[in-house]
Image 1 (tube, rainbow over the protein chains, first blue to last red):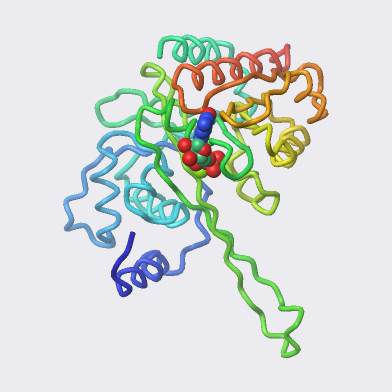
Image 2 (tube, rainbow over the protein chains, first blue to last red):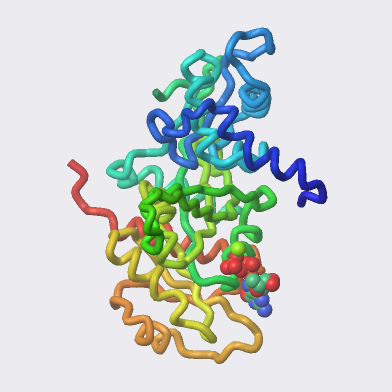
Length: 119
Length: 194
Ligand SMILES: Nc1nc2c(ncn2[C@@H]2O[C@H](COP(=O)(O)OP(=O)(O)O)[C@@H](O)[C@H]2O)c(=O)[nH]1
Ligand SMILES: [Mg+2]
């Protein structure tokens, strides 16, 4: 994917710079937790990096942690930290997956089966 | 933390399904054939601090393992969205499995009859963890054709674990596999939800 070595190096190093060592993320978000922007970031906010703004732009429609990571070519761990910042600043809302015990919900199974059959 | 976007619309609930199996068995192919988006790739990184055994200075060394996963998405109306993760089937990646299996509705173990043993670690893992799973035998053209019962026997599967044939390249076949999985998971859920 990279013909340019310096570009490659930059991509390896940047996530750690960007998150300023906060690699031990706060509450660990699941890869499928959805994020959606609820307050647009204009770019003048203090403490938001270009990567925060890129996430806020991307999440005008709900996207999972995994999708954000893939679209922005960032490690999922880095995206978790950035989402934590955005959540803290009130820019995004999150939808977490059902807790494991609630994967018993009959309505969910029915909806998923109907949805798959209709594909 | 369940708050909707500013227009007041509720976000769909994300649901995770796993597609596991050995290298080259067709995981990415199956994800791609049923997904509504082109399969995407994400990476999970584990940093392991350990003291090098052959290092007399006792200096700590840090090793980093990165596991790439392909995934796709299927929207189920406005209420649910399925994410399908193709997960590498090697045992040394169990740290990624634990993360992925948490909250997963179920797993498809893809098998290739030319290399049946490749799916042992996946079967073992889901059995041990109690994650509902089914086995789908991906039909490669030059692979020996076994009866499903033989596959079941070779994998030492319980009688209640569904085994079916599939063609990971075909959307309708992938769809059938996912329906079989969700039905199985539904039947497996504890009957009384108090
Ligand atoms: N003949 C045949 N080839 C397949 C089938 N499924 C996958 N393949 C091919 O097998 C190769 C490996 O598949 P891939 O999905 O990348 O495997 P993964 O490593 O499990 O993700 C690719 O070249 C696919 O095109 C199948 O059902 N039949
Ligand atoms: Mg693959």
